[in-house]
Amino acid sequence: MNYLLFRLYGPMASWGEIALGENRHSATYPGKSAILGLLGAALGIRRDDETAQQALTDGYSLAVKQVAAGGFLKDYHTAQAPDSVGKFNYRTRRDEVVLGRERLGTVLSSREYRTDALAVVAVKANEQARWSLQQLRDALLKPRFHLYLGRKACPLAAPLQPELIEAEAFLSALDCYQPKSLLHSKQAWVTDQRFLKTDSTCHYYWQGEQADFAAPDVVPLNQIQQLVRHDLPLSRQRWQFQPRKENLWLSTPTSQEES
Image (cartoon, rainbow, N blue to C red; front, top):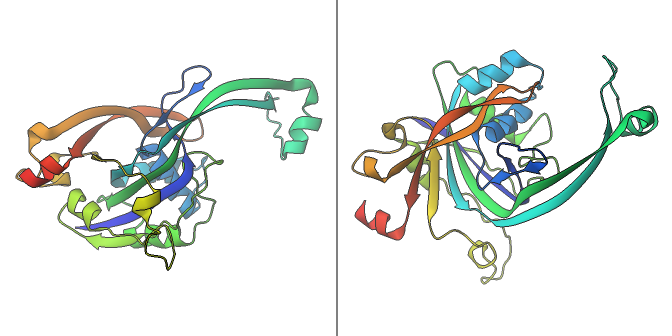
């Protein structure tokens, strides 16, 4: 089985959860909506292209290896924007401030971010996939639109380094992926491990059956937790999402020795 692997790292990331009023929460790892959004931006798919967005949603299975959840950052955010006027569209920020001056409203919100978070993503193409994994890899190397980690204020701080890997299941693909060091220095003491705080327990998330992730003798069923996340895109244009079931396995030194 072929898999597409790539790395997500930045000084700040925000992996959106359910928004309650003025609070904009962030998960510790990227969900399906964020990953598909990044792939869609790389391919040049617009949000109003519902057909292509749905093909992206239905065509691929994903898994995430959370290497470092990162630190927690909370920002008190203020923004001014005019409300909509029929079919009129403000083309620039200047139009919003000048032409929409009488309709400006202030939005106050509290937004959460993760700092120095590192995750590895594995993508598997389903039978109905419109784009091959090679096409996705090429798009990540030369994206059509800007790529970011959940929010436009969170740019990538390291190359995605997408690679195609042949493996038996998600776990072996994720563990076989060895991206280049984030730091480039001739001094031996300058290493990722020295400056990037990785988690003592590695979190693996995936959607599907146990066999999609690993063999039962490697990851027993009683070690798998089932979660529910509201990150399955229903409509990018209306910004609507629906729940999906997700699996979690925690890899600790003890579980690795047992397996």
